[in-house]
Image 1 (cartoon, rainbow, N blue to C red):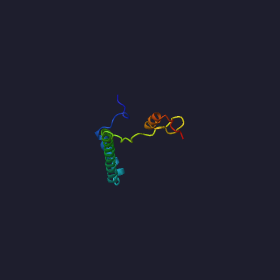
Image 2: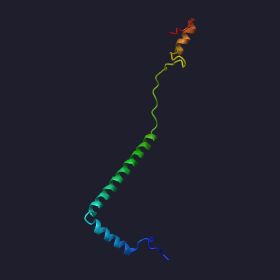
Image 3: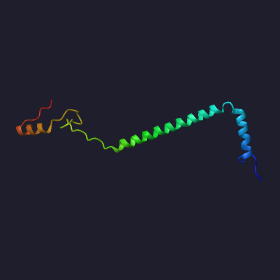
Image 4: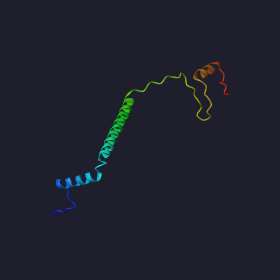
Length: 104
């Protein structure tokens, strides 16, 4: 025993539904088709843009990072006071001369 409400419509029922749809939407059917076509085209464009962005990100990640240029001897600061520390060459000269470095 089959229930009519739960079965998929057969070919004859599909023809009846198509005829009813044509009667109801007959004049607007070309417009609906055009809008569906435009929607599909826009969707495909969006998918291509997303794919190209993903591809560009992959290419950027594959390129090795450029080495940083050395600044030379970087300034060093005391982490507690924030004052600049004397450079290594200044401390060597001051020790050799017997003087204490001047902390300003």
